Length: 319
Image (cartoon, rainbow, N blue to C red; front, side):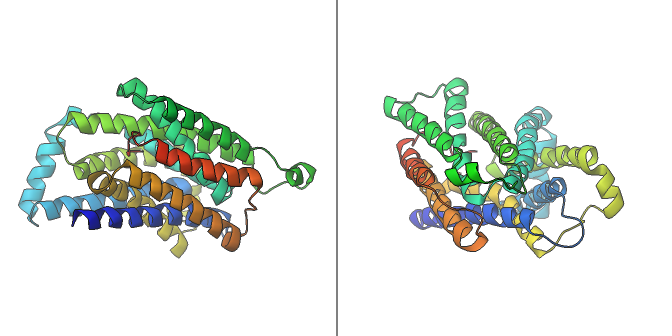
């Protein structure tokens, strides 16, 4: 049963990661009449869906008793305000990260985004060493240096890009800065969250409810500050369609999938899932979206990322 759950969580993680990247990229570049949906509102809706899903899971763990569910939520959240407030920091960072991913995929093709985003392995390693006192071997540090070099090669412009005088619809620099900032926020928030989980005995689902609560608050603040005028003019759900809801559901599913991987799988399986996701994203981005042409530098980097995933089994799975 345990083995089946491992491979089931592996398959779901590959599906969720690949589908989210591709559908998010497609939804942000699809040309339709009327206003485009606001990424800030999509982040808020995803957080609310995640809270609802986690409450259902806690309800199931409480033997489907509403009284037991109410007692658990009251005892673990309301009666422990300081423990709950600890989640405000990673929650705010995750909210920023989720918004940055929309910016990144609005300006980068899915394949380049997937590879560049693997720099979160490096940032997670650095924060793990500094915050959790983890120790990495020589080969593991070497693999991280290779990863950095490979990502730099991926961003190196090809001859065709240098010769082209046409301006692209999105700014690759903006997309790169967004994904790099997301890598740092992902690394810090993931390690901070792991530290909290190891110091307390609360369930992962309760922690996700706390994260979602603060994430919703921070997300609504972002909607008001950055898109308040657009929301008042065209509504909170402006531009939402079937594809938008798929993106929102996949984003909400991400936190639950990671929790399942933490519980049933391990770092090696998670790294394998990430490598498979990069390959699938590259193929679909090339054949279906037709917004990516692989170069020799990208192919080399793709191989390097696969090696790095296997060489660093001690990087925490929470990012």
